[in-house]
Length: 183
Ligand code: SF4
Ligand code: SF4
Image (cartoon, rainbow, N blue to C red; front, side):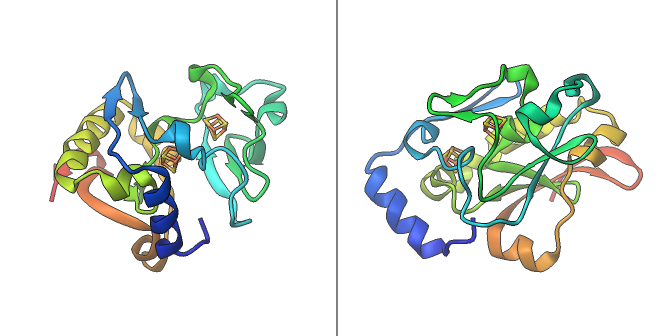
């Protein structure tokens, strides 16, 4: 999202006068805000590619029908939105969607778990409720191998992290391997 934080805060306040529920379930965040928001899958207001790593089992010869591809095993979305976004939501079965789609607004960056701060679910859910959900997601992520996690994790500069994300103080892996730690 290239738009400014305060613009989104005002927009989401108008759309969501009451708090919605969030639940981590089977590797997917059930997020009561998504139906009214639908920002994630459609056209983004930035043309900077947002990478979405794919697992080997999700790759197939016609993958470019489903996604714009950054490289052989990483899809991306930008100002055009995701190729698999339809008027009824995601057109792919759950197992075909990038891991990032089920996690968002939790985001694995530089081996640690962050939240995307302009998502309405993040703005309106107290951090004390978000953190345990993040921990559930983090425990689920530790079932991936170190190599898979390195593939799934975004590389991001400190400046972009500070502008767009909030740390949950949860490390999933470091250079030595999968290593869940709370900070
Ligand atoms: S920004 Fe948040 S609430 Fe909106 S669609 Fe994405 S995850 Fe759902
Ligand atoms: S794969 Fe589906 S859930 Fe993921 S960004 Fe594309 S449309 Fe959205």
